[in-house]
Amino acid sequence: MPTNRRMAALGAAAAIGLTGAALPAAATAVGPQLLYGTGTATDGGSGGAYRYDATLVPDGALVHLGSASLSTGVTKTTLTVHGLLPHRTYGAHLHALACGPEPASSGGHYQQEPGTDPHAANPRNEVWLDVTTDANGTAVTAAENPWTYRAAPGSVVVHADPTSHDHSNPGVAGARVACLTLAAR
Picture (cartoon, rainbow, N blue to C red):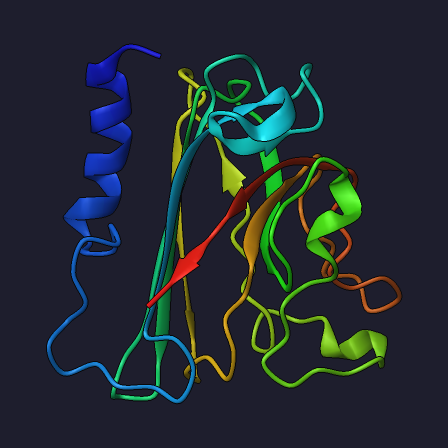
């Protein structure tokens, strides 16, 4: 991807202050205060992010995430993607573990209050970041959760489908198509 496009995608996240470059001075949390990551999705992960589906994640696709747990008791998270398929909705969630060569390497969804009840999968207990891309395959989305991290999520996973809000199957979003491991501070 040309550098100017990559910078434009990162600039969109920077405009709302979640690039991973700096943590707001007043932020405090029990778990990590800041999560961040940027990578180009490639087969094998050599670009900083893993790509599991070349049809849905074209060469050069960029994934960027910034998340801050603030002293106000709120966590703000921003996901920026560029170079995905145009005019398409992808599901995206924070996952418990780091990415790996297999899509399942990242484990299940990060849950602030872990639970096995399917209803624990909801946008207040998890970080849901579905994106709908524009004509260039670019999208920016944000989530705000009413808690600070209890532990560090390991990754953000991009899924093939939008996240289901259906009560019989909440949180399901299809196959894992890309994964970005996150660093925590």
